[in-house]
Length: 421
Image 1 (spheres, helix red, strand yellow):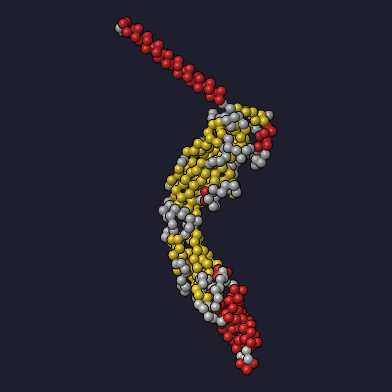
Image 2 (cartoon, helix red, strand yellow; image 1 turned 60 degrees about the vertical axis):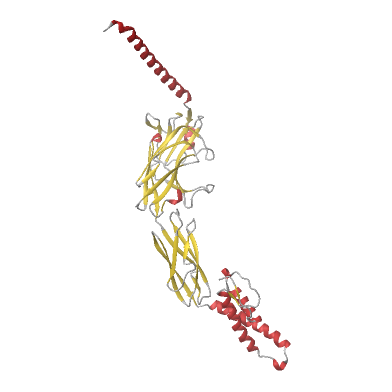
């Protein structure tokens, strides 16, 4: 070795030693800071018994920290819990389905909550006691078909059973690892650093699923591995007719309601057809909720089958019966006859006795005029001599009677279009 290099070598060794000392001091300082910031709380046996009072028979507690997991006997005087440890009760039961709270109006229709079978006590950032209950909310009731794939989402959160109304910050975030037998799931790793709302959303896509999708949720901090099932809602098109039985010969209209269960990521058109009549309109664009309406006027007597068709979904059918219009005819004839008699009484009282017509004349003329006025009104034509306004959506026997009475009393003079029935 060249002795002239000794001073330089000694300087390098001194610098290296100094760097190592600095690194060591920084590590000690970081450890001291973490120790200073670590939150710790003594949990008494009374608090344990109170929180886990609804525990199933034979359930066991576990004390879990990043280094170990050990059984925790019931009846201990107290347990020290810090920011990285939890007292965990893991049930050997499936997740419990519950309704979404009524004060969550932002949730899609059909959403429900799953209370996972794991419960834990921990401390928050201020060393306060928290009850951590992992919760999953299935949005919209499951996966729905959008024309290309089945899509859906669920939300994951930690509900504080000791304080459900306030969000609290966790001293240490809790990680969730999520996997599913689906074609896509995102995100797969969650870090939840607070209790209660808002929850974290996970989106799922499956191209050809079965009746449900299995999802595995792993919570390493609680030493819990859980399994849930997300329903797969097959796309469906339904037709409802109200009423299913209407009066024939074009005297009544049934309302067709179209219902589609599936994702409405774009406008969906349903084409309606029937074997004996023509729905109006025959082409309906559904709204954002997947619903639409059309009308169906009767024709002659018998029945008709209405069929709805839309791309990538099975066709739907509904039957409508056209019945003999007994109620309509009775109301129309009775109204016309009474109107004719009232008209005859007025005419006979003012006419010369030699020129009086018989009562049968007014009865027969009133019946025909009343029936004609009622039938015309039923199909949307006003043959009465004065403007007539009626709610033809509620075209019932009372309305028919009044129209026929007016027709029998005043006769048929003007013609004016009225709103269609």
